[in-house]
Figure 1 (tube, helix red, strand yellow):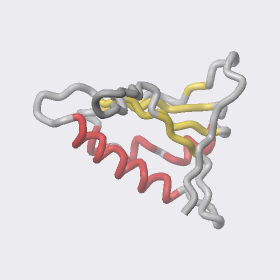
Figure 2: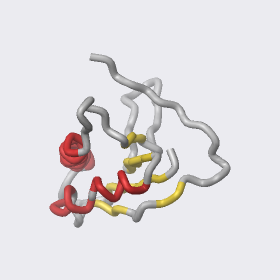
Figure 3: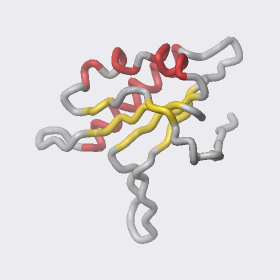
Length: 113
C-alpha cells in the first residue's frame, strides 16, 4: 500500500460515536461497492489505527478510519468526500497522503464467504 486517507470522527455532544461509526461505515461500504471490478475485487483496504484491544471489557475501534491503496488514482476515483458529504460536521477527512518510505510491509486479512 502506497497511499492513504485518514477519516477522523470528531467529538460531538449531540451524537454518539457508535452512531457515527455506523453512518460512516455504511457510506464507505457503498463507496467501495461502486469501485468493484468484474471479479468483485476492490483496490482499497481499510484499517483502524486507533483500535484498542481490551481483555476485561469490549475492545474499541477508536475514532479513526484509514483507507489504503496501491494507486493514488484509486483513492481519487473513490471520491470519499462525495460519499461523506452529509457527515462533514462530524468527520475530518484528510487529503490523500503517501505512506512513509520507512514502512516496508503490511498485513492483509481477507474474509472468505
